[in-house]
Structures are given as structure tokens and as C-alpha cells.
Length: 224
Ligand SMILES: NC(=O)c1ccc[n+]([C@@H]2O[C@H](COP(=O)([O-])OP(=O)(O)OC[C@H]3O[C@@H](n4cnc5c(N)ncnc54)[C@H](O)[C@@H]3O)[C@@H](O)[C@H]2O)c1
Image 1 (cartoon, protein in one colour):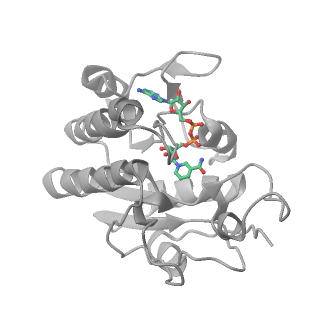
Image 2 (cartoon, protein in one colour):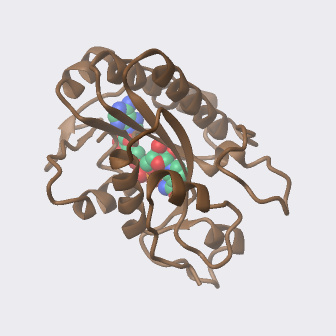
């Protein structure tokens, strides 16, 4: 797992299947984290050699981030990860995309995971790039790829007073995030899949049925 020291990685890692032999990496080594700068393709190759799957979370996750901030991890890093995963013969690459990849979808329209990328900010455009790289690796190597269009991850159930209805409708809980990663790693019979990633929120803008059907994702939490 890359970017495992971040918000999602720290919350999800302890909830993954007990049988997994997880190698948690991030930019800098820390307790339980090995150093892996994803912009370094040789380091990626060394880290991925022999791995069954790579879960790529490392990125700048800010929809307002500038090109300069996004360039290292979100543009170069995701390429190095995709390239190294393919070259190492990793069975499955899971890429953290975002619903920001489709944030220019007109209001009132349901977002399906089969919708083409339609970002409204540069960060979302880097996630569209990540998805495109996933397609490239799946088409040219033995590695199959799942790109997860993650919604609004928060450790606590969003407070209706503090968080917009749109964010609540996109909530992804830690438990469901771990289940989503499990499903994305374990699902078989796929080559390249883009999947929406939210909890089982009563009201949701992004369709989940496709993720449930294609990955066997079983979400349980609801922001309402
Ligand atoms: N948090 C959300 O609501 C959300 C929503 C949609 C998608 N995502 C995506 O999920 C992933 C994880 O998000 P997060 O909220 O945990 O972000 P985060 O910022 O908390 O964690 C990202 C981690 O990536 C690491 N990183 C950055 N540059 C790196 C590099 N060059 N090499 C190695 N590691 C590097 C950082 O040190 C950090 O620990 C990201 O790809 C993000 O775009 C997050």
C-alpha cells in the first residue's frame, strides 16, 4: 500500500483481512511504515517485486491544489506506480481515483461508474489521468486494474450541521473503505474496472450498484 500513512491508509489498514501480508509504505518511514517515494520508479519496482496486489493511495488529495503541488505524486508518481506494477507482474493494481474525476457532471444527474471522466478541477483531472494509466497497464500487461472513484472519506459519520448534503451523500466510512479495498483486490474475472466508492448512504448521487455487482462490494454504513 502506498500513501499508507495518510488519512485513508491509517484508518483502513487495521480493518483489512487478517490473512493479508500488508506492506505499508509512505513518503517517509515511520512506525510500521516503510519509505517509498512513488516518484521513484526503481524504488517502486523494488517494493512491488513479489507482491500480489498494489493499493495505490499516495497523492495530494486536495481539489484546490495547484499544478506544481499535483505534479510529483498525482501526475508523475501514479505513472511510476502503474509502470512498476505492470513490469513486476503484480496481479491486481488498485488506484485511488475520486468522484472529483466526474465533478463537472451536471447537478441532478446520477453519476454512474461507467461515465467518462469529466473533472471540474485540476485535481480531478489528475484522477482521470490515473484512470487512463490504469487502462493502459491493463491493456498492455498481465496486471488487472480497479480504479476507485472514492467519495468523501471521513472517520466519523458526517454531522448534518457541519457538512453539506452533497458531502454526506458521498460519504465513505472507514469500515466501508476497507471493504471496498478488499473487494477491489479480491474480485476476479476483470481486466479494467472503474468503480464508485461510497458507503450505502440512503441518498447518494453516485450509483453503487455497479460496484456491488462487479466487485462484490458489501457496504454497511449510511450517513443518514
Ligand atoms: N480523503 C478523501 O475524502 C478522498 C476522496 C477521494 C479520493 N481520495 C484519494 O485517496 C487517496 C488517499 O487519500 P487521503 O485522504 O488518505 O490523503 P492523505 O493526504 O491523508 O494521504 C496521502 C498520503 O500520500 C503520501 N504521499 C504524498 N506524496 C507521496 C510520494 N511522492 N510518495 C509516497 N507517498 C506520498 C502522503 O505522505 C500521505 O501520507 C488519495 O489518492 C486521494 O486523492 C481521497
